[in-house]
Length: 294
Image (cartoon, rainbow, N blue to C red; front, side, top):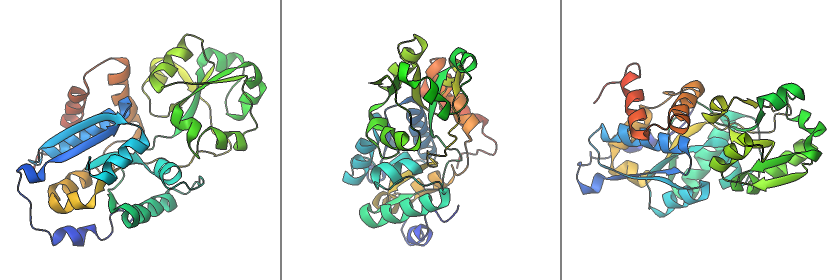
């Protein structure tokens, strides 16, 4: 568990088990893209399997919207990424040590907002620059550094968060001396369409997006090691964990439950094949080795 949730065991052991009535209801939130909808539904179904009623606030908004909902008590738990918490929420410069990032966010989240990080889910979702395969092959594009040769005549598509974050576009320009001819700000769903239709030439994606395989895109290697680790892990209000001990049981039960390839497949089923999120998650839970309903 690498130190995650230190002290929570003792804290929860002293708490009387809550009932499953209204007081134990848990609000699960997620950010506003497909992977987050899937992860939010995974949390919701795992919690419901323990007899706890859940209100879903999936597709709620971006990083800051979900974080503020947790802090204000409008939500009880959502899945965050360690590198995002470290750079966007704590506003620290990117580093490459995953353990140092995890320990930092765990400590500061507890101190500043009384929030607890549960064990990581088992995969990392980092930013990734993607291009069409035909361009990668014809122009010999393998690394992000290779973009320097074509960038002045290319249009890049970046999301609003990537444009604003410490680990986003401004930091990328410091790590890689690349100047694009034009930069368009697009939402993720529109970005893939724009890339497919030739409206942009390179996009910033999430490394576990199902559309990467679905559209036969190529991920350019981060040869300067710019992007920090982004391990996915649930973050919850400690007050809720005290009130509903079964919530912590559900979150711990998901430790290392999903690797990057598994996450890409779930994303593919929903984003590319258009399947229902809840159905895809139910199938994943049923097929997961060792899953047993409490």
